[in-house]
Image (cartoon, helix red, strand yellow):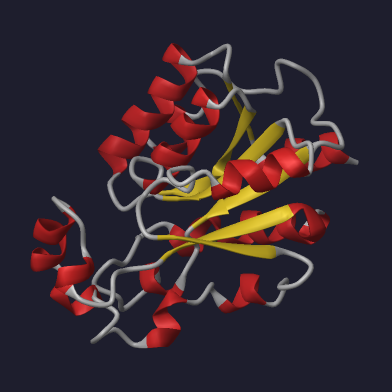
Length: 209
């Protein structure tokens, strides 16, 4: 199954156009994952134009998350310490600070778009993001970014658990591994059909109009 085929298992806005209480949550589209980085995500540039199109449509309703690595190995809790023992060059003490920034094509939308920094895969862990969205009476979260099978997976499942309507923009998500991307997309469609909808960028933008 290729990237496009995996998204065709179930596609469309089953519950109608997203309403005014919708936020676009773009996951970790940072220079840290761009070409030349040790954490390069191969498809990141491939999906970037679709993400840009969506952000340009609703910049004031976009939140960009950023994955912020610990300063030192000692700052990494529990099993994360083993993780950064494998990737010591990604600790902030040695990392080029600009790598934590958004891609330039997205950074230009700050503001009105907002940033949300997180130290782990999920943006929901400490409750800050959920509190922000509840204050704004958000009930629908549109998801883009990466990786489909890591940080995006954590963001999607957290949103499902919290009761949000979750819309995954199927041609605006990316991974560095084809097999696990396909598996994740198929899982979203087949196992979470009542809680996760998938739609392509063009159709979503048309529904927002």
